[in-house]
Image 1: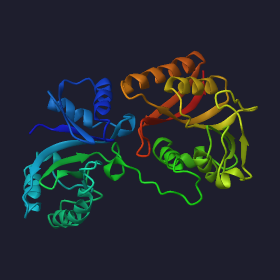
Image 2 (image 1 turned 180 degrees about the horizontal axis):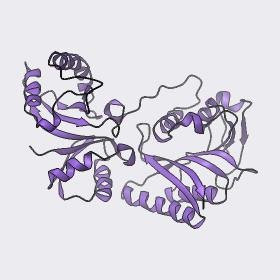
Image 3 (image 1 turned 180 degrees about the vertical axis):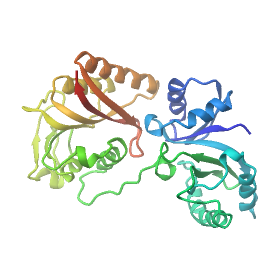
Image 4 (image 1 turned 90 degrees about the vertical axis):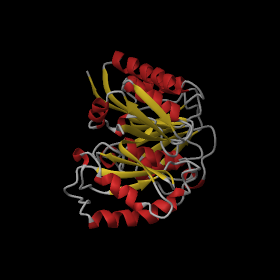
Amino acid sequence: MNPALLLYCRPGFEADCQQEFAARHPLDGRWQTGVGYVLFEADDSYELAQLHQSLDVTQLIFTRQVLLTLAKVELGERDRLTPITDALDALDARYAAPWQAVWLEHPDSDAGKPLSGFCKRFGAIVEAALQKRKALDARRGRYRLHLFFTSMSEAWIAFAKPALASPWPLGIARVRMPTGAPSRSTLKLAEALMMLVPEVEKKMKPGMVGVDLGAAPGGWTFQLVSHGLKVFAIDNGPMKGDMAIHPHVKHLRQDGFKFRPPNPVDWLVCDMVEQPARIAQLIADWFTRGHVRHAVFNLKLPMKKRWAEIERCFDLIDNALYSAGIDYELTAKQLYHDREEITCYLTRTKVR
């Protein structure tokens, strides 16, 4: 079979995953769609393989993981291991062992989740078999082997370049609910800081000042305070729990669209429910007026034409900051804890 790209995504966003990839990498080819994943087979398989060598999953918003498939394996009910090892033996020499590691995965869908227990149990069997064949070597292996099970009787053999792929199984960064957080929305910002902000400990230091627009009941404020920031929590609604009395939180009952800080702050976070273009305009205004250096914000997407709306919002930010002579970096991801939204990280690099 010809190699294909296997992209993991949130169930229900397969079309958006395809549309974004096609917009960024306009290759001729064919798509196959599952629930929680898509496959792309290009007309030019060499071009596709070359693209995979430089394709960084962090640059794709709707894609959680990017793999290059090498074979599709039909599995028996009694012996699932032999078809896999036979298929591995038959691979092109370019993809020969040793592998850095082997991950057994499944779609993050209602149909895929029952496979989780099987993958954990069978994973130990596969790993032992590969070690016996001297096919695993964490130091010498160039690629990570992925076995993607769509059912108990079918699996895709694929691989990733660890430096460009997600470091988490299924492409999902697991975040635990912290004790004392006033709402589960705190998990979104925790995941965003983990996935979108490189060296967050150096960029978010104790003593810095942050602003949380639409703060109530305090889930995102909780994350800022946990990093040692002093926070202006802006919301007409009430803060809850420790965030209502925390000495580093100043709650101002004001409109998040109208508030501006008396002095520049280090961080701005925003999870307000509003039209995405209006949020993009608000964030751009904070940057062009010199109010902030870093921002994490959510864009609540429409049910249709999500990619077009993202391009519209990013163009709005780009035009505003370019006109102001501001160099910046903007990254975005649909996080595991997001729903009909994406989370963005915008940072000022310099002013021309």
